[in-house]
Image (cartoon, rainbow, N blue to C red; front, side, top):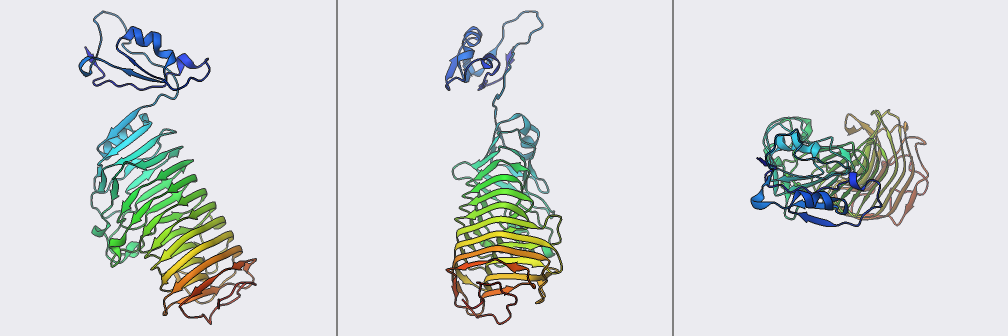
Length: 412
């Protein structure tokens, strides 16, 4: 009888160790069942080395089992080459390698409900079939999940197949890219992503860290639209460090959440670093946000806070620090409380409080056709701002600012 072809069982054999003190890591290779039985308790990695890649069993009439294993924290590595295999097999794996996955049109690479502590590795090129649908192309959830990529790997969305200049506002129905909902106490590191059809990461999570991720939609300069890189809502303790983004919408958009950090970012071609729009959602609070040590180039806006006309909410304890702007086309710094149906009205309302805001060392250039600084606050709704080392030049000085809080200025 042949069983467990190419058997390579690497396990932490917890049952024999449960009452003992923690062992140092030790790898053991056994070539017989008796040796494995007697030696298992001193090993943390066990290799069952068999002849010609087979584990075999002698013949006897008995009830078995042929193999018995127990313990906790047993690990299993799985390599999947299709989205369907990943979806069906994910729950039994603690290390998942996605090897050159071609996701069929209209389907999600479904990595939701992963086992706690799972590591996910993207290897080779991950691609997606074409269909007009809302997506997402990838969805992932779980606790203590580590997401990374192998050397040279990339995720190629081939968004040009959907781009028509209308984004999510019409034309073709375009799938969103990555839904990180309930991806808690987890990390995403080093992914290289190309040409998302519309929105990149949709984040609704607690304690998620995203490090050194590249989103390159530079091919969408003419027809890409609404290609936000990171959209955050109803989240706490989110850190995005070292992101490199080329896109045609917000590099960062925080719609609600607390304890959020964006640092060491590079944002080229989009709409800048944004808080909002705030108001009109189930959660309309943004608190304790630091956006720092970042560059915004060739973008419509530099840094921005926008709130919805006639709605309520709170934006507080937000810091923009050490932000360098270059070739901004519309506004270097903009705070607007007049958005309605996605467009400014010119008339601010004061239902959303914008308090305890810091602009420190926000510097750089705006194109001559743009405006350096524009602040349009409702009556009494913007207060307790800190304004230091702000030097934004090259554009026009706005004469339409209203209710500018003490210390801030539209003429710096």
